[in-house]
Amino acid sequence: MTLPVIWIGSMLVARSYEERFLWVGAEEFRRVFFAAMMLLAALGTFSWAFKLDVARGFVILAVPLAALLTLVHRYAQRQGLHRARGRGEYLQTTILVGHRSAVAALDEQLDREAFHGYRVIGCCLPVEQFSPQADAFNGLPVLGNLSDVAEVVSRYEVDTVAVLPCPELDGPALRRLGWELEKTRAELLLAPAITEIVGTRVRIRPVCGLPLMHMERPELTGIRRITKDLFDKTAAGMGAILLLPILVSIGMAVKLTSPGPVFFRQERVGRDGQTFSMLKFRTMVPGADRMVAALSEQSDGNGVLFKKRRDPRVTRVGKVLRRYSLDELPQLFNVLKGNMSLVGPRPPLPSEVERYGFDMHRRFLVKPGLTGLWQVSGRSDLSWDDSVRIDVRYVENWSLTFDFMILWKTIGAVVRGSGAY
Image 1 (cartoon, one colour):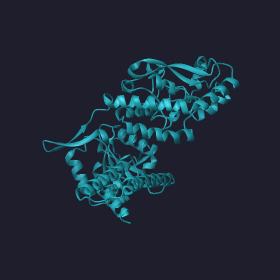
Image 2: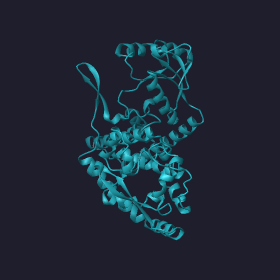
Image 3: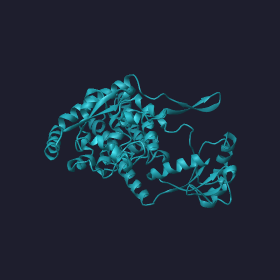
Image 4: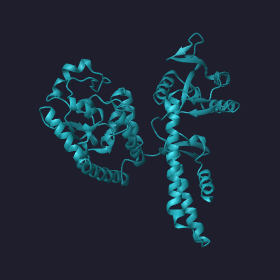
């Protein structure tokens, strides 16, 4: 009977009930793990120091089970909350403060990821961009200028104020805004000038009495890369063995329903800009790559990538394979060969690379992936700018934990089939 009390106490010490850690990101789950590890360490220390006879079942079974059930409950609670937010419930009214371009970009980002629960009701712009006659910008109501933020918060009962970097809101101005918002229930969010960097790489460090933001280097070399390569090849080898009957069945279906080879090989660009031959099950008629020019004007892609929702080149079996990403399974052998990783940026064509800007070359610091952040974020439905942002975000924030999260989300993305055509 004491375990629930001890477990809740451990969770309180780990600060896992604080609202800022709940329902978003991996920090909530990390704190549950930390609570379990801390409780196990405390039990071990006390039992040794005071020579207590603690039941092994309590240590080996009860604490891990409590952690597992807590994680399952929180995950289910999070999914339920996301669905409720999709129905327009439990939303935080939000205003955006900053320059027009930054406000528009953040508004689009919040709209794409509406499950976070921020409902943008308007914006406040600098005086030179604010006009009393213009009551809307980019579809957002303009509620005032930068000096009107606190008044707007009170008038519309705003829950969250998101401030974007702009010279008009320097240190003293932000401090005064914070003081004014203390009189309301609104929380203040500050967007850093450096975007697409997750919290694990950002630390606030006191330097000369000033809180300066320190950005850690991305984890792209050394033991972490070796660990990733080892995990990739081990998991790909086990996956190829377990999925062998499915691979054989798909190969037979492709061969029996359409003339041509079972596999489709295509040159792609990998880490450090090196090309390799990527393997897929053939889902199109023979010579489909030579038909792109004739269909290019009908592309449903994003301006750089050629995609077509109802592609006449796709076979009947190919439609099913592409719908559930089964045509990608032979890439397990690319992973075993070392050309690809289980998780990484989308492997691009050389013709696409020729059109890349400077930022997109950042993706060549890592191997392309069988799946990746692009797949769990919409795949072919993404705009080109979103594709760039997502690939760069993955490279900048790579970690094994990030990879595991993407692999988990890939299951749902494959079942939904969103953007797969």
